[in-house]
Image 1 (cartoon, rainbow, N blue to C red):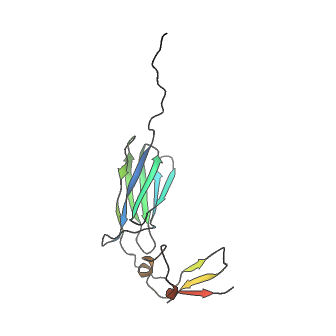
Image 2: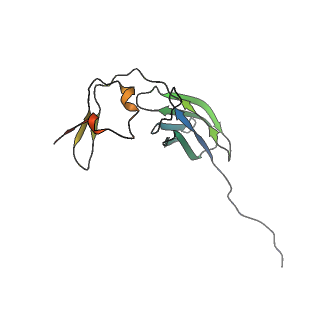
Length: 148
């Protein structure tokens, strides 16, 4: 009996990007949005940071360059460009976000299930001050529930 010994396997064909998103004090920013765009093709990949401010985007196309954007309500958007991904090994891209000077007149939160409308009070609260509580939690004393 003769055997040729050929093994058919696919192997690793992708790469990944991971990292952390923190504020100016080094505190984690859970819920920050990360969008990585493969510049030549326009393919977009996305992730949201976990409670520790960490994100991971697996299964990305090898090569690049990539533009990676981090955004979070109440903070200035950060961008890293020219990221090149290697086969089988991930790139680490960390972001340190700075407060935005934007002021918020109000935030409207709607829910399909209850058909109620919630509004953050006081109206002229600085956006970065309340963003530390969003989207993780809202405190009852900060909400005014409006009936339909």
